[in-house]
Structure formats: C-alpha cells, structure tokens
Amino acid sequence: MSPVLFLIPVLVVTVALLIRAEIVGKQRQIYIFKPISTLLVIAVVLLSLLEPGQNLTYTVGVTIGLLLSLGGDIALMLPENRKAFIIGLGLFLLAHIAYTVVFTLLGVFSAWDLLSAGILLGVGMGFYLLIRPHLGTLQGPVIVYIVVISVMVNRAGATLESPVFGGTQALMILIGALLFYISDVMLAANRFWKPWEYSRISLAFYYSGQLLIALAASSFV
Image (cartoon, rainbow, N blue to C red; front, side, top):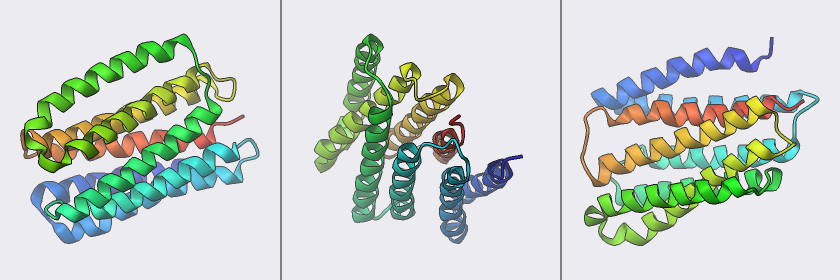
C-alpha cells in the first residue's frame, strides 16, 4: 500500500479539528492545525518522488504551489489584519499561477477551453459585481485574483485531453481545481458580502481540492 494513503485519514482529522477551532474561535489551535494540514498535503506530493512513474514537472510545480499556499495559509490566520490579508491574497495568487503554469505545460489546448473560459468569465463577473460594493480599494487586486484563478481552473480542464494524464488523474486535477475555486468564493463571500458563522467549512473544500491536486502526482504510470 502506498504510504500516501496513510496520510489521508490524518489530514481528515487535522482539517476537522481546524474547522472546529475556526468556528469556536480557538486561535491557538488554528495556529497548530492549519500549517500541519497544509504540510501533510505537501508530504503527499513529495512522496510521489519515490514512485518510478512520477512526472517531475508536475511534482515540482505543484510543490511550489503548495509552499506558496502554506505562506498564504499562515498570513490568513490573521483575518482582521488588512496587511496580512493582502499578503495572503498575493501568495495564493502566486500559487494559482504556479498551478496554471504546470497545467499549461502538461495539458493541451482544445475547443472545450473556449466553452469553459466563457462559463468561468460569466461566473467571475457575476461574483465580482455581487461583492464590488464592499471591496473598497481592493477592487483591482480582486479582479486580478478572479482572472488568475479562473485561468487556473480552465487550464486544469486542459489536462482531460492531454496524453500525459490518465483519465482518473485528470479528473482529480480538475475537481481539485474546482474545489479550490469554490473555497475561495466562499471565503470572499463571507468577507465582502454576507458573513456566515460556519463559513470556515470552506476549509473542507480547500483541503479536498489541494489534496486531489497533490494525489494526482502519485498517479502517473
């Protein structure tokens, strides 16, 4: 059995404890369980290096994205600090760019890209118009972020047609990217539209998405 599979139940436990800590406001527990959870996902992708069929380009690109995400996670542990929020936003922006690059390098362009780009553009514009009244000076950065994460999801879809990826593997990447997208939408909606007591459930989407993208590194044959 792959050692990666032993990390998944541990991650489920740490994420569950993290969500609970976020909901009840246990800040010390957040400082513990959030970086641990992201480090577990990083361990998942690094373990793929032990497999003979792994793709080094994919593993390195995803590792860079996860390390940037770790920095973003740490910055966003201070949600009321505007400077920390902007730093976190910037680090996650770079993480999405890292994913976009690796998905583009290993994916292929097809007619489906235009359809998915149109859908993502419409969804992104609609969500931006919804939160725009509450963005203040962050309108520009948020527009850039929405564009970049939309391109990331679009390029994740490009793996479906690529000979580099198996069918299940490409689905893991696409679903992972979509879950990451959903988690960011939930985070932004809570901050800039309607606060929700249980908004930190978005972390379940976030870590599920990151895990699927990381697990795909162990699926090359």
